[in-house]
Length: 388
Image (tube, rainbow, N blue to C red):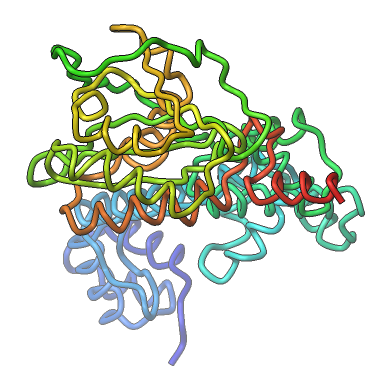
């Protein structure tokens, strides 16, 4: 069967419109086609217009259907472009090498032509770069970015550029803080924002208060010489929990802590103190500093401290939170790094999270600016080496 081009069919139909009814058969024979073909073509053209004669495998569409089909194609194309932008924009911002890598990784899902068009990358440049090997500098930058991202997520978005720099240097990378800051900005990595929280200290009592002998001297020459303590509240799904901590000013380690759901002395300061004396030996003379909260100033807790002849009590001045700044700083970090932006937890979940934060993060892995960005363990090992 002879095949006819679409353009020939359209021209034949249009010319036939000038013929009278009885002249169609003779007109068809003049064109060298069977009259039945012309009748069929005219019928198709009348129904589908410009959508006629699409060829095998292509559906015949009316003009209205053609408009709808074109719009659907545009919508589909826009969705593909949006998806490419969502996935690829961050790679484009990281440079040509990372953009090429993104295109390579996604060419099974999107066409290369589509990706280079959407990401505004020269297709010629892409293929030329594909033939070239990545330079040593580019490889190092890619490695550094990957390692920064790894550290950032490893420490649960708690570290800013300074601590990430120290962590990378500790792992053997030679890199400056300014470089880490630049790459974090490029990668869109930001430290979790800390929020300010209200302190809750009830000092409206006539219990056993003492002067502030610590006097904001927040350093200690040896472990077990100066401990500071405080209590803060934590909201859970069912009411508040209360976290009591005891911090040694020598290395900033939390030597004692307790999470309770009542504010009595037996459930706050006493168990935290007991853990502290079990975990760390008291030196010849220990200063124990706290605020004037009733849990520290009542007879029960005072008698316990007085039973240790080497312990001297110290308390912040009334309403002056800066007198216990180390504890305040810890609670700010604790709430900013663990609680801010997270959903409320059950009491059981909160106990697990607090234990994980203090014992496995703060006391072991966290880098402290006071310790020259060393972990507590690194700091104490350095002290031991110096003494040997």
